[in-house]
Image 1 (cartoon, rainbow, N blue to C red):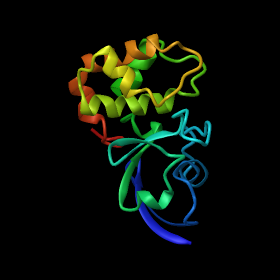
Image 2 (image 1 turned 30 degrees about the vertical axis):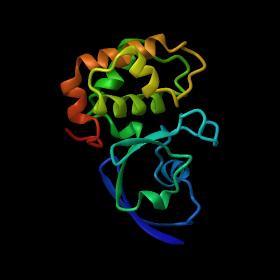
Image 3 (image 1 turned 180 degrees about the horizontal axis):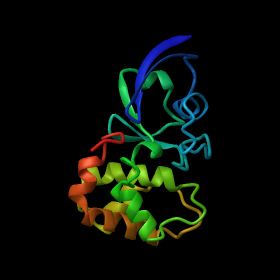
Length: 166
């Protein structure tokens, strides 16, 4: 067992884990963060995307112990006091989901994109979310949602890596 500390969605954890435990399994099985979806287990789909120290990562490719001393934000950690994050709100308003399986990872990839580029072009949005697959939407409403969230860039940037706090 390996001891590590991590902050997930604003809560500090000090835990012992098997060194080979993937972050996605730690988040889901130990912490109950089931919004972090297990998709392909091969890093192709992006459904398991979370923010680690503010950057999007596919949590099926990261060992839990690699987050030692860091901060992880899951889809559950984006909202603040019951208010949706601007990207979550934009996805809702633009109908940017159908089955919802890819949505948590897609939203977190968009949050990372907007934290680096608050006003991306359509091409930049496509590049920013290219590691996240959606089999339902055709991506048009996802792109529309990211553009809408970009329009509220000051609000999105202020909470993009806050882990649930403004």
